[in-house]
Length: 408
Ligand code: PMP
Image (cartoon, rainbow, N blue to C red; front, side):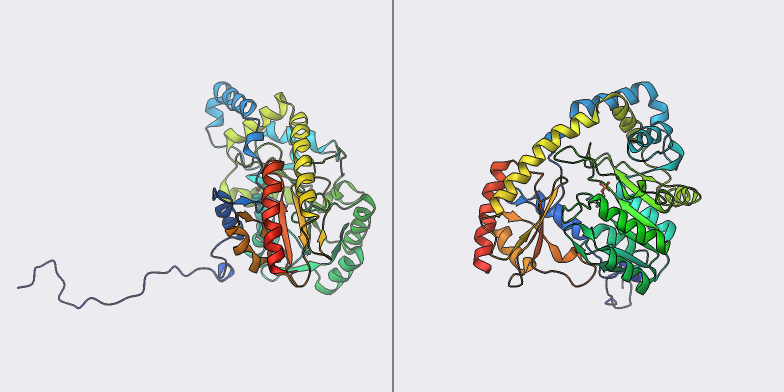
């Protein structure tokens, strides 16, 4: 007699349940950035792969004081829902900082949970499936991802050591009729290159002539090794109304607080607030008020100056250690700020194929191919110099040199 609980039907073999994933996410199971964080977490590997600030340089005591201040004085507000546009104190501080280069009011600021969300919010507000986005070749891969999951097609535009080539941009606009152009003009990710003023003006002229909007992503601009400031393209005549300028506190204060902002003008501000509300209501109020307090009460510029002094030494250590170990004909950028150095080893090399040997030797980098929308340079690699001390950098670069020599 079968128990009333046991079924008399034979067990049906069935495949494990799989959600019907949206086509735009097919083949995107693992973000390349997730793999970086996994590599960087391995204690036996010195990773040049991620743009990960050195945690020993965080202004921990100052930030703790600001959290404490906010929770003590504005606790109930800080722990409550807030506004999709962002908290006024932070928008005022953001506007004050931006106004050094481009007159900005608090109303023109939308707070985001880091620039990554800024890119997603902008994509959400602007992109339709099939739209073309013109990007530098190479460009920041997680921006490409944020645009791609909104159905956009990325087209890479040729660059030189001064950034995107105005003629190539002009041709690409005429050929592809893009919805927008995405650029990182200062201390670019992944190359570390900076667009000089004259090039910015040429690029602006092309964008104005074709009436194409710009997303100008600037998380690194303040990390200048000689203290010089590069005014955003958004500050050029006619450009502020057609540019979404993205800023982030991640590289200046802390990536963990997840605070950034978009500067915009006109009706798009309303659309950005609606998109932000649909995605996440608003960014963390306690984090926003704390960052506002930090910007008001502490000296971010002094902090950034001391951090960039250290980053400069590390840039020197990495560039100096790489110069003798790179093969003849290799190219390496000479960043004047930011976090990254870009090496292109030459045709004989495949940086992706070499990575396993590098990791086995205790050193990681990011293969460059993933930063290209098309026609990748497979011999290229991105190396971040900010995370480790000069001694650690030199030792790891030596091990990388041995791996490169074996693959030559
Ligand atoms: N844009 C660029 C060019 C970046 O390099 C990064 C971080 N690596 C981001 C946006 C996103 O940074 P966050 O979300 O931490 O502000």
